[in-house]
Length: 196
Image (cartoon, rainbow, N blue to C red; front, side):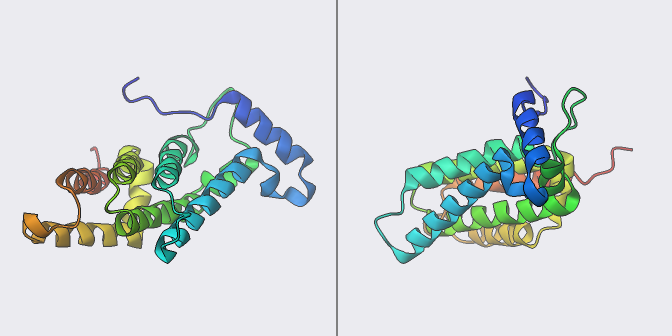
């Protein structure tokens, strides 16, 4: 529903707790959520390398799907909402639920946005998925506060400013992309306002 904050599904949390209990030496890679997330991160990075190299292995559909995953993942696992029934496991809390862990994830996600704008500017579906990620990040104030402290977020605002300064006929990004990213930048700053 409107305003509802997604929670980590109870079954996933239980699996994460079980993996933490049997992990040798506290290895977070035993956690299925951490393993899946790390695999998608590596896949996204490989896609970017392939695109930069101009190989035929670069797939806009795969880039779009990775971005879709990051969008959905960030709403649930990034600074997860505490659940009274099933609190996040130690691994999930440490890696994604603390300001330090979340900042590292946010830095990666913002760098993904930059790479998609740079490498996939001609692929409308990839840009739309990237816009969905950019829209999702500042929706929760605690994430928005970390966003504005990220160097990449400032660089994104400067990129949008440079794009908007150019005549419409020579802008590298479609108007809808500029609008959505600019809206998300404004939303992140609006989240800093003190409600009192």
